[in-house]
Length: 365
Length: 186
Image (cartoon, rainbow over the protein chains, first blue to last red):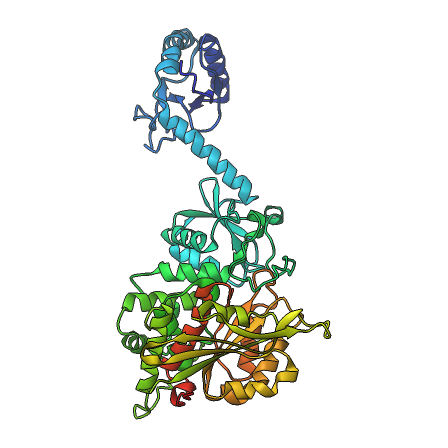
């Protein structure tokens, strides 16, 4: 016997009366006594072995238990019912022969996986508290939840039993369990954003107790570093590593729809930024700075903006999506295109800025 | 003929003006710090006159970096050093009791320059002191009809100082008012 087996052999019965099930249990107890592997009679799937009354659906999805193949990894023991007294002796003989063979030779890997999966589900349900866990979220559901302003209940996205990210809408913060001071927030947020956009993570609601280890960024209790140390300071431990929700929204927005414009952007005819994105926290590149400067100065259509930015349509769209998720757009921007006769920045300025950027090692705008 | 172009760093004592200039200057910053022992509310050695640094540009041109003295009693110097600047970098220390009021004071003092000069706000120590949030600064600017960038920065990081300067340039390129003001030559 494989000593690696730690779960008992799960034996079930479907399609039998209560009296017949009790009888079957007794028979199995008699026939299974010498089994080298522990076993138990269980009421619910998953099963390693299943007594199935012929003509009854065994729950394997075949829709009919009448000698249909059993679910993968489940050894089915068909029993021609009803269990009359003359059949009992015959069945007992069968069990005495079959059960040891089943226990020793059962290719139960599928069942083992099913059992592990059931355990994971139970853990998720426990984490979710009362009620049923939600199905896995796709990218659209992720965005909907992240941008929802109505529900302030803390929640997490889970991959199996692992919490990928915990979000507290009330304080507009998030954190990655296990993230330490040594984990740069910039790399963590990109990783989390990519996983969220990819979808397939399960949404669970958390209780206040689950959030006890999450620092409220709204408090002003941090130590004074004695220098101008905003971006460079790392919090101590996972409990102190909560980040602003806008940081996550920004990076999700950059990734969320490389092939298309978010509806929030598409339905806006003229786009104008109410304020600059916080590039000190988000990180930035020259194009994002350029686009921000354009969109703060006046309104643009998407086409005008792509043209002004010198192409790079996909990156422009990613930027717009990120701004939209962070709620940075003016809702009713008017068409304020300047008179084309107005001069743009004098050529001299362009030369000066080119020189300065080159001297300081900055990317050319 | 070689020209000089000026950038001005303004902010309260300890906001990081000297540090920011040191991160990008070709020369060690010339700081005219003096002891403030007689003024117990001020840093022991803080900039009471000017900080100065410079970056050499091709063709003999120079980018001059000025740190404005923080103390209100030197306010008369602010307008002098702000004359003809390419842009103004306002540095705010979020650990101070009322950093929004600090910024408000500088916006008042430089109101005339802001009508035709690009500017940016760098907020330091916001990680340890998240309150007030960035939104408070944006609200303040909006009430004054200004749409300046506000970034959480650590001016000990050269990249953060470059971000502040680059945002000034992008505003000019996008047609912000300063683009229509001739740069002053030294």
